[in-house]
Amino acid sequence: MDYEGVMANVERHVTKNPFPPTIAEIASYPAQKNESLEKWREWELEAAKVSQERKNQFAIDLKKVLAEKASDKND
Image 1 (cartoon, rainbow, N blue to C red):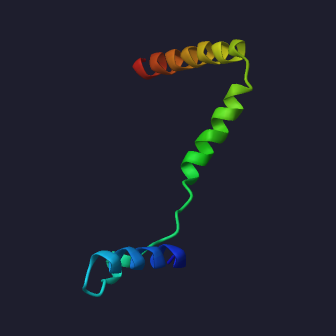
Image 2 (cartoon, helix red, strand yellow):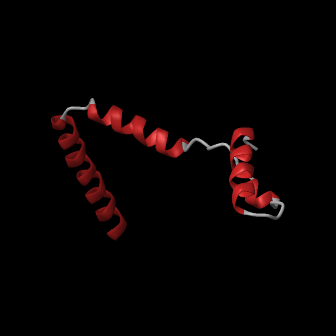
């Protein structure tokens, strides 16, 4: 547990309650990194470097591939 966070929770508890705290009332865990959010931000930065023309060409090529796959599936 996060020592400073626990101590802050203990101090808050004793100023408001005459009874001893439970573990759940004073527990404090360090903040965890959101790796998915960090990865998403990296992808956004990389995508910003790609030209709009290239993005448009990618969309056109993707639609062609999807149309081909759909027609293959129907045959």
